[in-house]
Length: 149
Image (tube, rainbow, N blue to C red; front, side, top):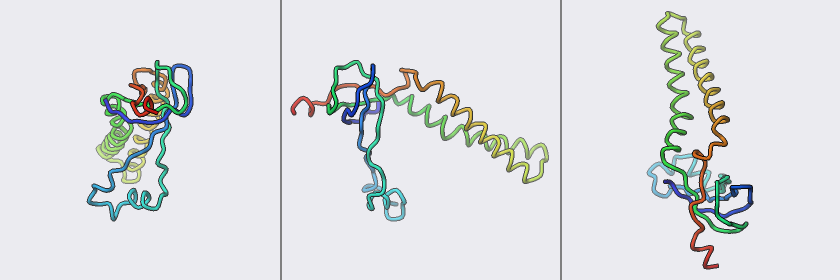
């Protein structure tokens, strides 16, 4: 399970809105001097806070510090669906058009069409699974730092 700590900023029925602070690994990266992510971080341009709706059965209040978790398999499947599936569809549709001896502009259009179709399928799938509790982040526990305060 991948865990992240955060602070409860709002309550919802059966869930809480948690504000997390995004962490960067720029200090340990060898490409930090030539990377836009590192530059944006140094200039303070990037938003460092994230808002997550996390399922919770704990009695929490606004301001509590919590640990939110999500299963690795959910994150991995989501990454494959969002990043890899559209690229695979782009290549497959372009190769099929090329094998059918289509002219180069039509091969490019076929690739773009495959990418667009995959993007629409991903969007529809994400709308269908948006309310699935098995795919949502969960509040694992209230942090000990909150109990000490």
